[in-house]
Image (tube, rainbow over all chains, first blue to last red; front, side, top):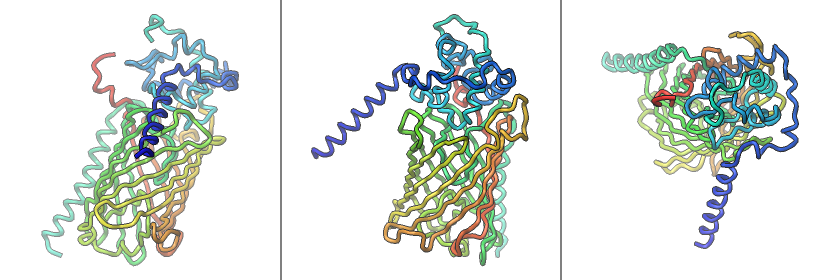
Length: 133
Length: 303
């Protein structure tokens, strides 16, 4: 019986820790080495064009064709995204923020994820008031 | 063969095809742009890729084979996969088969759930899989191979096989990793019948694949390298708790290829070759799927 209680306690503690970690802002989870990474496609018009197609095929379903968010899902033109480094965004695309609904995109090749980031960087700031997104 | 029996057989065959056609027409009508670029081109092996939350994927995968000393068969499976959250995917299957010179039968259904327990991406990513299946012995879907299944079962008429229903719980440990654009996936399978006294059965599936190019094209295209992925699969049984090993098991291996279209369709094809005398010579697999993006938004009122 004692053994069962221990297992239950460990499971509950682990779940609580996972939940606590999950509720943290994803930006705080990005390791410095990832944050400092540089987009090899930054500013390249061909990469931006390819990124636009990839964005519309994979990301627009949640973030909208105008990238300004859809229902409760956030805009990628927000200040939070604009202030993040390319490395931060690359980390987010790879790992997702699964407890807040953002899936991992590790199945997309890394080059394509960088192309998407190049496209996101080419977007104008959000037309909505900041804080709404 | 009586006229009544022949009529029943034809009706069943028509029902299976009608179901496939209805689903095909419904999905073809949708105009939303969708793409399942993430998914590796596997039929049996699962990778760590889950359905995007809110998306509904409808897939029809089929298998055709001409086993030695048995009648040819065709077995379609209809699959509904829904992304409940970013870490949980649920699926339901209905399946049937039609055998030449025999009959067409509904073989059963399955419910499954896949969970990713770790919130971050690692060099190897585990996924936990749990499935309940209610299928009769006439099942020829080869969605997985476990235990000591034998090619000899394929010689038994459907009328006898369909009377034996097996309800079982199946668990899989799915391991998957990405390296330089390649996906490597390993599945360890265990299955236990809950309605009869059979021992635990085991199986495995291994696969690797890669898109033909890792860089996106600046031009929209349908038949281009970025939309095509190719790889190979190896799967088979590992016997039972009391008879563990490769002896008297079915083993298959073969290349596999998938193409995603920008309109949301994915097409897959794979010939899988039997590796021992206990396996079917070649299993011809082909499938088509459509992903309904953000299906849950259909039930939301406003932005």
